[in-house]
Image (tube, rainbow, N blue to C red):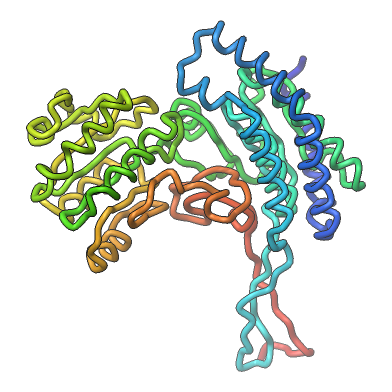
Length: 418
């Protein structure tokens, strides 16, 4: 296969399709989404079989457990995939919305219209559900999509891609509105991230190595986050039972996700009370605690933490723990060592909660809730295209609005500038 020619063909087709999908009406887009969701439910067994083929290959290749976890589909996750597509269909269509109309002294009205970005390239590892999520969000937001999944999920991605094509054809939308790159050759990624004439935005979803490579090589703007070193801070006015429950969920529900908590901070005045039950819970779940000297006084199973541990996204049953003087040190620690992804405080003090919300420089900041809620589905976005820790355009879970831009519109009645 001539990769350059193949990717150029995909790019040309995507650009042409983007003009058609941008003007598609809401009913057609929703019909395509509902058709896709029903097809996913109908072919659930076939998708699970394709996923098993990918899992067998992944285990044979010795992929790490975090990657296997992200690759795995279950009946529940396939049902959730379909539900996510259906939920996107129920969301308001952002395309064409005009907001902030204001009269100017000249008599003209000036406002903003929400419009698609154009062609979005999504590059992702494992997570076959991304194929359906990305297709749904790009379709509803009026964008064409070029999807390049990892080689480890090629069978499942092909199966989902066939269902997307079926849904598009069923409602008369352009078949090239969503294209899945049907090669595992890494050169295809190199082409995709440099095709500025055909691709408007790149959205990477995957490990730190993938995203670091794209940051270094891409000539197309990106919506991305590099890693997820998320924190829970147990304040000196934290409820003990709530603290244990939130840390348990934030750390142990799933180890291989970017919104899993990797670092725990505990206020010094409550360390003797809070750390023993939290440490016992973590030890019971098989989680290794890497702690500071004070942590190891109250968590006997802890091993010494290095400076690097406090900045690490483990994606494994490992957590770094540090005892801090209070809120000021907790905020400073998070802003220094964190990845600006998601951080939460457990406290009964309203003023401290507001300070934490204002001063922690992250895309999602929470009070008395697990970091695992940092997710497009949980935020009501339907499904998410990814998480952004950037500060321009989109931040946090990126849903429909994050896949659109705004242009200025002017409404006049014949005015001319004096």
